[in-house]
Length: 274
Image (cartoon, rainbow, N blue to C red; front, side, top):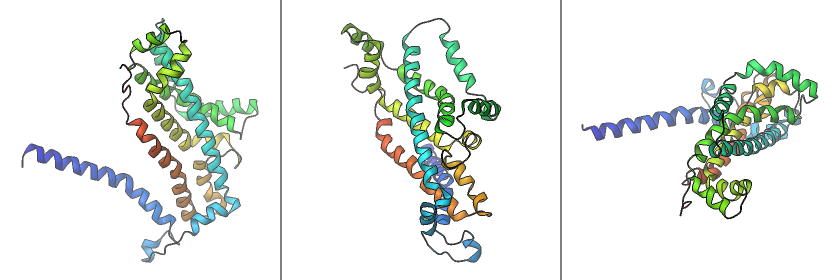
């Protein structure tokens, strides 16, 4: 067996392992969500049903629709605002020369390394003083602050690949810095911008600790916390409802990833210099 065949075999084995590792839990989740009983392996029979999906959508006490709506609104606003602020900051850092630039960048990165558990107590007191507990604001502002370092660092790498000659040519034509950024530069980094928005949306959508501590009921509670509290609502673990809700909750992420894929894989500055 030559080296090329061995590499091909190892590559295929690695791909197969990754697919199995990620798809098997999802397939199991779908199977349980479509089963009348979660212990169908013990019973030796599998009965297909969509009752779990109908129940989580129709039973008002579950408030799953409210949780999903809250997650979509909070995650969407967080991703858009954080990406916008990150784009402005990344553009300024990549284009302007000033003292302490790297100190600012490294400080932002260092602040992002603090575990959430270290600040959630102080954050709760702050939100209580503002009267924001159990509101969208109580989650959106912390999510923006916590996701900004990721937005900044990713967009900095994209902005650094845009030639400065493009900015200079636009400024010579009479455009301002904001016009240059909005009309010329941002369209060139759409793949990076969409990937950042997608990552920030996923981060906010999946976040658990802040959503658990800063919300008290379905009016602002998000999907991860809502699903986790299904157990408390029923007195037992309703695996069918939990898995059905988890499957439905993954649909927005999958759709966003599929929609954004064509932007992410595009060339960063395709045709820009020309």
